[in-house]
Image 1 (cartoon, helix red, strand yellow):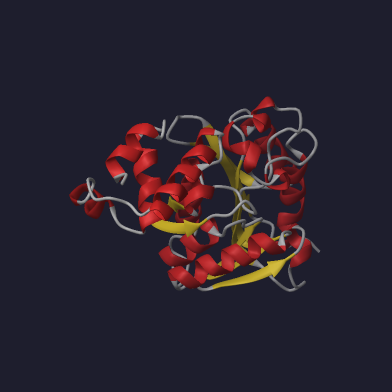
Image 2 (cartoon, rainbow, N blue to C red):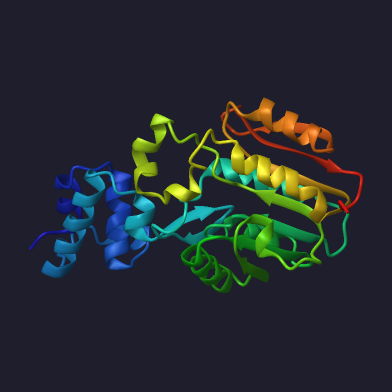
Length: 276
């Protein structure tokens, strides 16, 4: 019978990916695999592993095959209905947390929450915060709600398009969003993991700036005086996003770079209070 070691040698994948797939099939941690790598596998487990390995060689994302991705030190469920969490989005959470430092029980809004990683991470880091999250996709909200329940995070969920999903009276100290910002003609949409992710969460179907503009133009009417808006965007979009924020009435506009030193998160402060 085949062993885990022999299967990983013939699967045609990097060792780390092969090990992760084997952990998924056997539902055993890495330490167990290291101690039992010469144990025989059942024909069923071997067949499942080889099937997953074949899908991976065809480009199916690892997160879809194993069903999760780590973000901010927590394991989040991932399905094809949501974006796969990426390390650069952790910057959005960090900047958001800095923006509400000093507030007691701040009201926080995450627009287009997807799998819920941003809203849930904020809620876990600030248990006193009143976190609200929206998404147009019912399937995405279902995944987000499961993640919140699994991680013990308190988040209020609303389904709908951006601010239209919310009750009219909601006002917030912080709004964050990782909206679709890839232009519809960008070749990256045809490469790598992006081919398998929901297109409506990746691109606005236009130049990549239209959803960012909608959020910026609508945020003033939803922010409390002194509240802030922070947006994740493409590496080449910091300048237009900064300009749109300033034109909409935001002050103290600034951009933060991600770990690759690329401009990734831009935001500002709403000093005028809610729009009439």
